[in-house]
Image 1: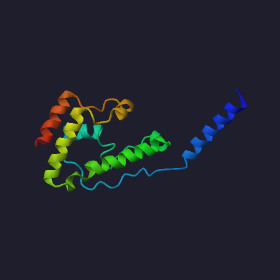
Image 2: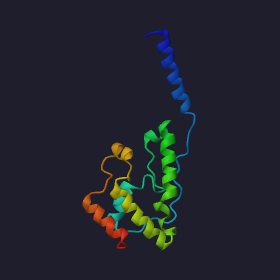
Image 3: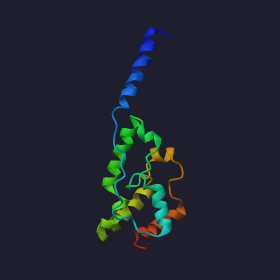
Image 4: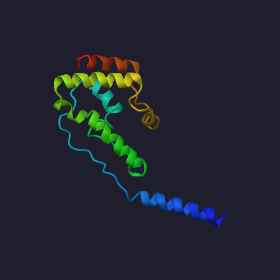
Length: 142
């Protein structure tokens, strides 16, 4: 290995270590008014959605390693602003109905859970039978 290559490796290692000094918060605020739905629907949504769309995020080890931590914290923060199951009961009834339909549409279209997240966490996508349960829930049948 040439001296230039060694310096480049040391520089990259130093940059990686320096990135670890830029931390992001990994918070789970209190649950204000959690989703109330049938046990099966709740189980599906907890498995497929809660890591980003609730205040019950399971912050895995990789969520503490920069630069991945920056992306994960940003994604969770954005997801919670779009839909937060930990505040579900605070939404007016019309908004809950709209959000329930949006959840169903996002899952049915394959946009949620995101493919990048599903690759790391297999088994998140609801089955056909689970989609039927979610459809009934979105139509107002808990």
